[in-house]
Every structure is written in C-alpha cells, then in structure tokens.
Length: 333
Image 1: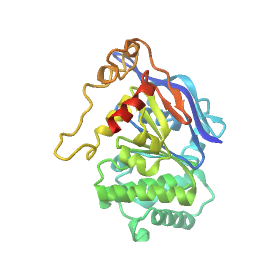
Image 2 (image 1 turned 120 degrees about the vertical axis):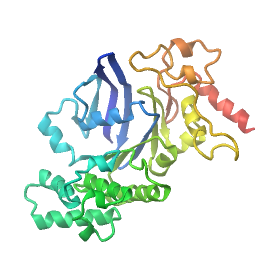
Image 3 (image 1 turned 45 degrees about the vertical axis):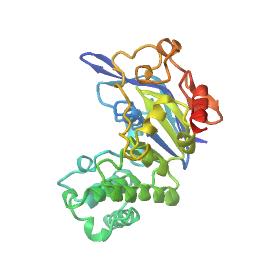
Image 4 (image 1 turned 135 degrees about the horizontal axis):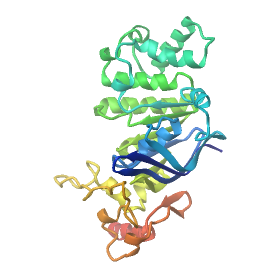
C-alpha cells in the first residue's frame, strides 16, 4: 500500500519575469518502509516537489494541478493545524545545510527537544532529555549526554548533520525527507551519514525520500530512483536498473559524468549545454538541445514524450527509450 502518492503535480513561482514552471506533471508513489532517491541537476524541481509535500512552499509559489496524498490524507487540502500536526510528527525533513537549519544561539538538546514538546505536551523535562540523548546516540553521536548541551558551532559539519537527522527522527515519523544530506561532507563523513540512514530504515522501518545530485549516494540507500529534468520525471525505476539498463539519454549522461566512470587519464565527461529556461519551456522534449540521440527524429523537437512503462516497473520519458537498449547492447558487444 502506498504511503505517499503524488499525481500530476505542477508547481509555479510568480516572478517579475513571469511564471517559472518549477514542477511539471510529476507523479510517483512511495510504499511504507521503502526508500526513493530523487536525482537531477540544480533547478530540476527536486526540492520544490518535496517542499510541496511538507507544505513549506514560498509565498510566491502556487500548485496549479495535481494531488499529494499521504496515508489517505490530501495534503494540498489540509488545514494549517492539520499540517502542523503531521509535519515533524509523521513526516520530517532533513534540510540541506545543517548550519542554517540549526539555531546558532540554542543548545542542541533544546532544539531537538522542542520537536517533542510541540507534539507531546505531556512529556516531562526528564523524559524529553532522555529521548534526545537516546536519539543522538542512535545516530552515532559519541558522549551524547554531554554533547547535547553544546551549541551548533561546537559541532563539526558531520556531527551537525547527525543532529538534524536526530531532530527528524525524534518522533518516529513514517516518512523522512532528506534534501542533499551529504552535501559538502568529505567522503568518510558522507559514508558515516549514509550508514545512519541505513540504520534508521532497519530499526525504525520508516520510508525515506533522498534528494541528491550524486547517483552513487542514492545507490547506497534507495530501492527506486526518480530522475528529474526541467521539473518533470525523465525516468523512474528500481535502483539496479538505473545503473544496469538506463533508458533515458539524460540518465545515461548523468552516469557518464560521474568521476571514475571512464578510463583513467580521460577527461571527465560533461553534459553539453544548459537546462531549458523554465519561464518558457520549449516544445517537445526538454532535453532535446543537449541530447545526442535526438538527431534525425523530429518528434523530439515537437512532441513532449510521455512517461511510459517500457518494462515492468521501469518508466521513461523518451521517444527512443526502446532503441537505447539496442545501442547499449551494440556497445557492449
């Protein structure tokens, strides 16, 4: 049964230059206990889509179509009080930069404890403190009893990220949304943070949405991957198929752009061109201007490719998704 279901979601931002079409017709489902990775370049609509789920869109944003259903509740029609009851209790978010997400003049224990106080008025100070320390220990914070009384600036970047994860986890939510949780962390700390998320899934059984630019990070956590481009879904399938059988040229380009993908001493592959201007989305496939596979096919420039199931559980929005398999097979042979 789906815990979260998004159908035909479109979100626009009103600006002085016009409406920015940030999310365009996005649909996906997430089952209880599963992890979904959302990848794509900056501006592809990843964060906006989950901020819509959280009810945290900016004032100049508006949902123009679609629905967001969480455990049978239509979040787009929920009242402010209903969203406050859900947010932090049943759905929590790990924001991208823990230094800006944390209050620099409040102790770590106070900030995490406030999440409990808001949703459980009957909790005593001693109960709150114990839960805070236990949760910090569960995400790998050493000497949690003493460190809980420190300020964010006294913690390293990796430790601050653990504090933000603990804050999201403290009320045992059904869904945790993590927006670039490993950004700006070195490889060792990144591995530690990813291990925290694996432990969370095993011990708490919650669902996770992990947003990242890094396919390698997503590969470590996610059961399924959603690739977004220009505000829309380009490909959606189980994680092994993204790496073993990608069917969209953009997905293949992202894979090629990873360090270590090609032979040694070869220049790192970069995707040519730039994403389209979402103030005025061009007709046809939004990736056409950067796509090496669009040559000779007029439909790529005139017809928006629908997101179709090309094999069980594997969806792609490309006019040549079937041909790409043969191209891969020819290269492999």
